[in-house]
Image 1 (tube, rainbow, N blue to C red):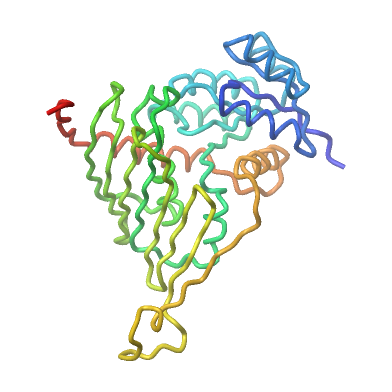
Image 2 (image 1 turned 90 degrees about the horizontal axis):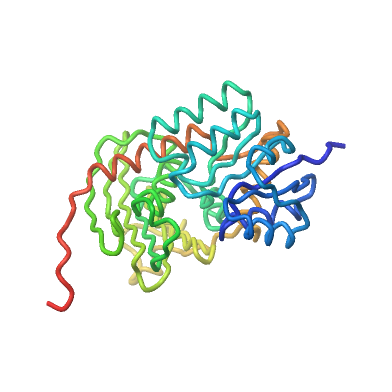
Length: 325
C-alpha cells in the first residue's frame, strides 16, 4: 500500500482554499499545511481543513513532497523556483509564468531536481471536454467565447493571460499541439491598465483555425466552445458541463429531407460527473507518485503561454469611446 503523499498549498486565496479543501479530503494524501503572505488567511484556512499554517514557504517545503501554487501570476516564477529547488513537485496555477524566460527557468529547475511540474489548465478536466473525447476527429474550426464580470483577482495581467489562455490551451490540445502559423488580434483596456477584452484569430499548421473571444468586463459568465470537424459539430458549455454532437444521419441520402432534423441528428454527450479541480489535483498527486497520469505538462503550459504572448503582442488596440457620448 502506498504511503500518503505529504502535500501543501502555497497561496490560499479564493482558489487556493479550494485546493486545500480537495487535498484535505483526498485518499492517499496528507495535507500537511498551507502558507500565505496573509498570515491570518493562512490560519483561517488551516483551521478549516485541520492542517498547519506555516509562517514561511521555506518551512512548509521542508515538510512536503509536493505543493500546489496559487499565488498572483507575477509571483509564479519566484515562488515556483523556490519550491522546485527544494526538490518539491509543483502544480502551478495557470499561466505557468509571465514570460517564456521565466517558464524556461521553471522547466529547467524541475528537470534539474527530478520533480514534477504541472500546470493548472483546469478546463482539460471539464465534464464537457471529457464527454467530447470519443467523437473528436480532426477539428477544422474552433470557436471559443469566455466572458466574466470584473474581479480584481487576475487583473494584474492582460485578459489574454487571465482568461483567454484557457481556450488557447484547449485549442492546442484539440489540435495535438500543432504550432500557430498566423495570429491576429484586437482588444481594449477599459477598467485596468491591461487588456480587458480581446479577440484573436489563430491559424495553425494543417489549416485549422481558432477564433477566441475573452472579456472580463461582461455582465454574465459564459464559457462556450464550438468545434467544427468533417464528421459534425460539437457544442460544449463549459459552465454547465453540457455537450452535444450534431452529425449527419447514417441513413440520410443526398437530396432527401425537408428539414434540418431530417438530415442531422443531435446526440447528447456525457461523462461521469466529477469536480474538475478534484480530477486535476488527483492527476497531479498520481504523477508525483510516479503513476500514469494525464497532467498538463510544463511543456504544454509553456506552449499555451507562448501562444498567449503571441496574441498579446499581435493585439491592435482599439479606441474606447468616452462614456456618455
